[in-house]
Image 1 (tube, helix red, strand yellow):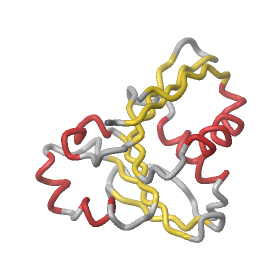
Image 2 (spheres, helix red, strand yellow):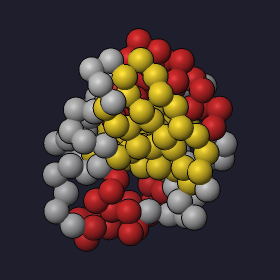
Image 3 (cartoon, one colour):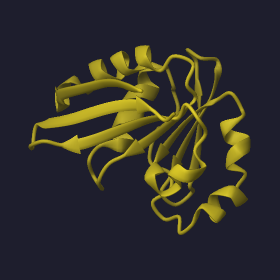
Image 4 (cartoon, one colour):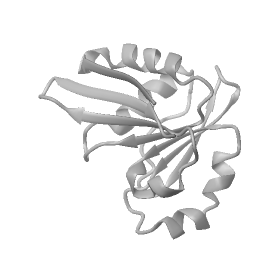
Length: 143
């Protein structure tokens, strides 16, 4: 199911994050896809800020998983970065299903590497550079 396409200038990202939250509905798993440096981590930072996360939000490139706490949700948020992952077997070995079933929000960078094990109703967020100042973002639900 296709939900939205939005184009925005970089300085409006907090507004886009707020708008995105209204589209999250009851979805818990969010798969971010885009080239290196396109703004996946920045998008997650802005969404976490809008959800009143007081922790430092940065990419877990080497730790693979970061955990934050949302004052707004009164729950954890898990932030994954699978850039360095070689196979889905590695992800299964860390107990990814437990994270998915925890009821916490899960934001996954480089999710295209594990798309075959993502749960139904995963919301995909694709970010693409249009020019130096313009990005295109769209999101849709995996059926």
